[in-house]
Amino acid sequence: MTSLNDEMSEVEAGITGIRTRLKEEIPRLFEFDVVVGNVTYNPNTNSVSVTVEPGSEANAQLSRKLGDVRTRTNGAMEFEFDATSGSGDE
Image 1 (cartoon, helix red, strand yellow):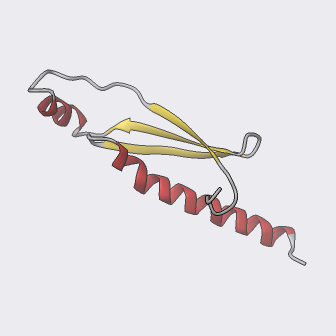
Image 2 (image 1 turned 180 degrees about the vertical axis):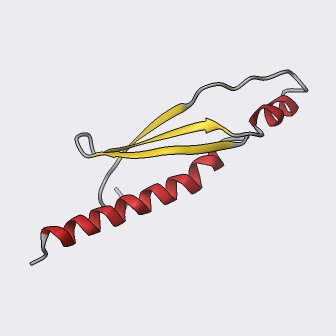
Image 3 (image 1 turned 90 degrees about the horizontal axis):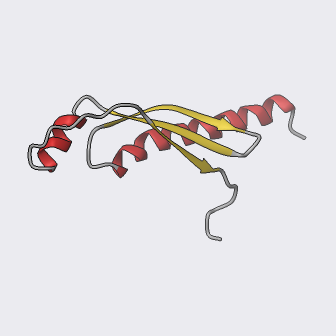
């Protein structure tokens, strides 16, 4: 029988793994520089929220991509992913 401390350690390790993976993969979704900010697990909804902000090179990259149009990036985007258990083969 596992103790509560052991189970909590397993949960924390899982959440840490999810944070690390999201911080690596989220920037690949964008064609411009972004920074992943907060990654928060919400046990009430069993979901993970991720805050993404434009990086320091975002304006220049977007400007070049759009044909040297002046661009301005303000604020942040937030994404919420449902957490599921299992292998994902469902």
